Image 1 (cartoon, rainbow, N blue to C red):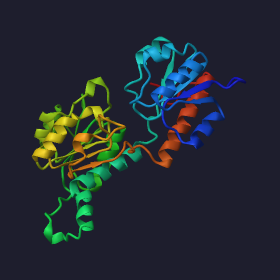
Image 2: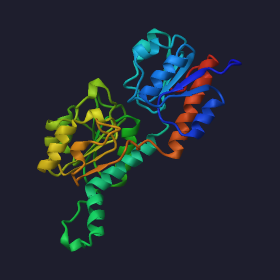
Image 3: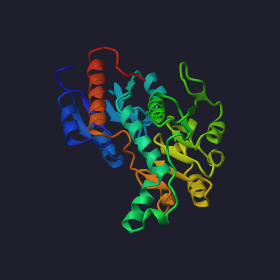
Length: 313
């Protein structure tokens, strides 16, 4: 590292303790929303050498052009779909992500949503609070033995599949291509996987290539006894189609940690009692966030020391 600290612009929410940790190595400019980032570019863009963002926020070519000294862009989590990586590389700007730091946390949360959606934990909680006893309600479905379909068998998808095996769930998956060494059934079409599965978990990257990958046809293939869980990106699921399927009884239930309207809640789903919603926290835990901050700073130190990044994109 040079004697003067490189200037870092942070584009996403961070806890004070993590900002202080970054400040040991970098001159931190905290700009966690669009208005503050615009001001940060105006005041510090000419000096900024590092940017920390998240995949859903990203960093555009125009924003990079406002930082002529930019040398490194870090994505805090694994996703980087809205970072213009080709443009960064063309300018000689290194890009890294937080791959591997929150995989277990996301997989845990995904399976929590599976259990909550299939067992109907939220309606059961509400019924109990209203004094309704078990003999007055339909039997809730069980999770064990159901067929789990994973959309995107990356590291997180594989960890979800491993958790499913503890519940004696047959596992199938859909990728663009079969994954070498995967011990699960491969489906070359998403609709085919949905027709086979009882529970469909979305774990594929976001971006233009996967927008509304889960549409009305896929939901109909999953069927009235099927459940959808999304811990990937909200853009992958057609929210209007999902809401209609849930209202019509063409889908049994859903669990979503991500949605197209975030950070605003998905208005179409708020009155439905067969959907569980959480505020994009699947990858958030004290352990996971600390690990991704540590990895980001490791990548910063390596980059300025002329060493290879731990997680280059």
